[in-house]
Length: 144
Image 1 (cartoon, rainbow, N blue to C red):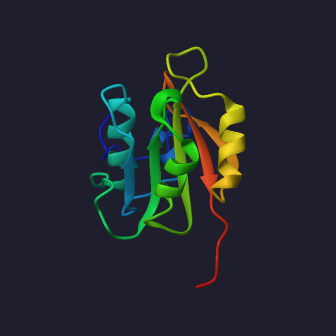
Image 2 (cartoon, rainbow, N blue to C red):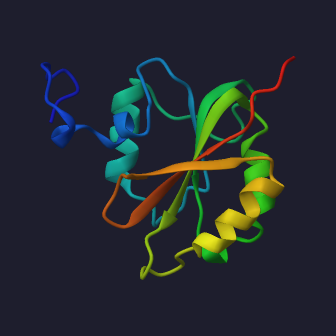
């Protein structure tokens, strides 16, 4: 499928990037990348934003964060706090975890416990990949 293919296709052919609410021109930071990530999902995200994702060294404000997370990765609260470092107020963190039954899947109770400690609210999940689940986490908007 080409990024230039046009026309209203409906939700059946909606890309993972658009299901994540991403749009052209958005800056998306990718954290937690490893050999096991879904490259097809990464390509769909980059096609949707029409740019490469940035990494943790970016050092500027980002519109959204994709955080790949596995049960063996350590402290989820710390990782979520780090994800907030460059995130614009009202921005979204997509927590990508292996689906239940896959190696290193993350217990939903662990996410439900970690998110509020990091100051985040879980809002929804999205079907984005055969092996990975995506949970949308948002920080409350704060006046600056």
